[in-house]
Image (cartoon, rainbow over all chains, first blue to last red; front, top):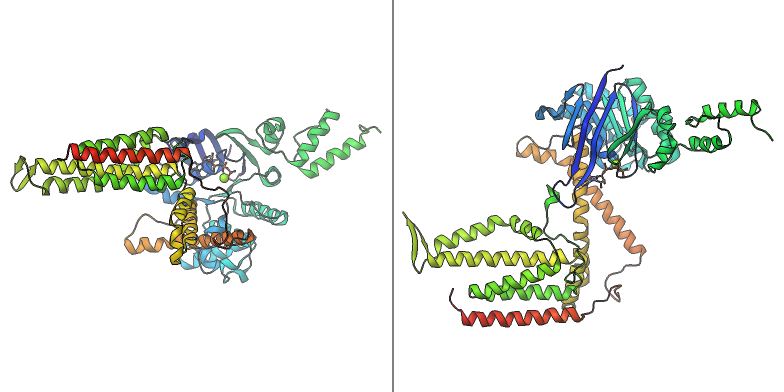
Length: 290
Length: 270
Ligand SMILES: Nc1ncnc2c1ncn2[C@@H]1O[C@H](COP(=O)(O)OP(=O)(O)OP(=O)(O)O)[C@@H](O)[C@H]1O
Ligand SMILES: [Mg+2]
């Protein structure tokens, strides 16, 4: 078994505790995230995904339970919480609204600068981060406010990547992007993980996105971990996902319907290429009668 | 922390007090405050308390909410009470220690002032707890509309106020969001000397201003698209009309004033 980088034990978070608006957003969650995984988190609106993610870098303090980073309780020593933020980089929903510097370069350099790195190292990291998100050097001196929405998004993500966190967390990185921008960002994320070997966690509403790049899937329902496993394991439980009000990948949905006619089919198919192969052999095998 | 601000908060319960005409409520509140200042005896002040309590009970806003708004200005209340206790002389001296002396009259005045301030705060919060900010500004606009004769842009002012109130919670959310995002990039907002802290605010303030302007533009466009062009010739979706309960409350207030004046004369001494 691989090394565990993040672990939660009975993690609980309650908003507005002690008021009539009290809300338990995370409710006794137990999960272990292994080093080098690409974890996709999915769950319907208000299920507590963003709240969970904000615990991973110590922005929110648990109201109950513990959270471990590299085997150490994050809140054991309160003074060290800023170090946690350098190890775990979080990029929030709609990160483009956090840009503030005059140029893209300076904005990406904000994180590394806060880490107290020297100038050459900062420069190296900024250029590297820009490469990861596919912004070429002509963007470096542009004003962050003159970019398109998708470019701003990528600049903001680069700002977190430039800190070279051991764990990169992206909260709905694809929200509000067109299909091309979405695909591009997904392959950038995948590529980033492959070339740096870091752990990546990303939150998404879109099952297809998760099916495309994730190695593991965490399904959150009402502040609890409803399912946590490999992509195959999770998508083979389509009915449960649907009962939670979640979508399944379009291909899986098709296969579920096909299964009603051909019970021998495996419903947990989410990869379009694999689906094509299966259908091909099904046709060839003569199972389909006119 | 920012979310704890209760002043000016609306607390919906759907009670009869909530559905009173905002103009009636504004006038009654102002009237009530004047009457509280006219009180000369504990008896009349007691009547003020009783009337306010009845209104609160009818409004069904939990008493806890009022305690919260008193808590916010507790230092001011304590400060005035202390000044009164130690500086007002007269009557029997109750207590002396070195140069400090507490007299009977001082104690009475302090108690009187404290109750008075608390009544003011509670009546003010009762107004905002039972009236939405929009209703409140609408009511004020209508009450101030005679000033249009003197070319005071009443409608514009009211609209500005409505929008400002509407955007306070939005901006508070936004501040929290941006602060978190910058903290995640290692921004240190909590330590350092004054200059360092002021500098550390730049990464929060710049995005905040930008988004505030963006929202302002978007709102302006949206309003123009709906053909908004100021108050001229503009009618209202919700016509304000004084109804039976409003007149009834006015009657109660008049009776109450008469009662206070009466009690002032019966028990005139402090
Ligand atoms: N600052 C806050 N104060 C009070 N309640 C909050 C706060 N933030 C979130 N909540 C509540 O906590 C619950 C979980 O919110 P969270 O943002 O974690 O959901 P989410 O899964 O990220 O949803 P989405 O997919 O819409 O982003 C929601 O019911 C929300 O109303
Ligand atoms: Mg969220």
